[in-house]
Length: 308
Image (cartoon, rainbow, N blue to C red):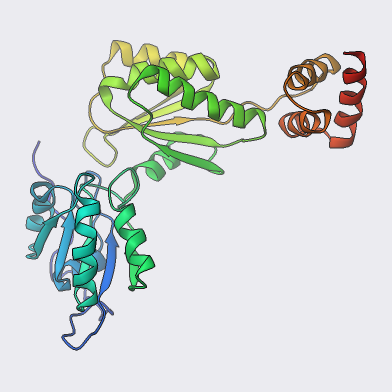
C-alpha cells in the first residue's frame, strides 16, 4: 500500500519553545512517552516531532518500524531497541543515561506506549528513581474504536489482549461475567489478532450470550477502516464469511438493564449465593447485582436461610 504522506511540513506552523530543549548543564534528564500514529502518518503531533528532534535517544520496539516514521518527518536521532525480552536488562543503563542529563523518548510500534506494549517496568523504575517524566498524547486504537462503536463510552474497561488459548479466554471472560453479576456495568475493550477473532467471539457468546451487543473495529485510521456493529452471533457470521485482516479491536457492550426483578428472580439468585456465602455476603452481592436496597434483600435472605 502506498505510504501516506504527512499533512504538515517543517514550515507549516511556528513551533513554540518547549522545555525539552537540550541543555549540557542539566544534572538530570527527562523521560518522555510519545504516542505515534496507528496507521495514518498524519496523526503525529507537532510537539511529538519537536521532542524527537531535540531528544538524545529514542527507545523503540522495532527500529525498522520506527525508522519509517522518522524518515517521513525528516527526523534523525539515535535509536535503541527496547522490547519485552530485554526491557528489564536495559533499565539500569537507561536510568544512568537519564541521570547524566540526557533526554530520552520512548515509542511503541504504533499508538500509546505501555498499553498492550512494553515499557511499563522501565517507566515504573524511572518514576521510582525520581527522574522527571512526561507524556505526549496521541493516537490510541482502543479509544478510537470506543468512540466509533456506538456503545456506551463510559464507564469502559480496557482489558488488553485476551489469552490465545480458548480455555484461558473463557476463564478470563467468566471472571468479567462474575463482576457484572456483582454490579460491573461497562463497555469492555480488547485487542485481538485477526486469525483468532472468530474463536474469541465464540468464547464471548459462550459466556455472555449470543444476543449481547458488540462491535469489531479494524484498520482504524487506514484506507480500509471498518467498524462492524451487531450482536455477537451476527458478528461471528459476518467474519466467518469475510475473514478479517489487519489490526483488530473488539468491544462488548454492557449487560442489558433488567426492566423488572420478580420475587422468583430474587429468590433464585439468593439461593444460589447462599450455597457458598453467609447471609450477609449473599445479600450484599445480590443487592448490588440487581440494584435493590440492601435491607430488603437481607431480610429475604434471612427468610430463605431459615427455610433451608
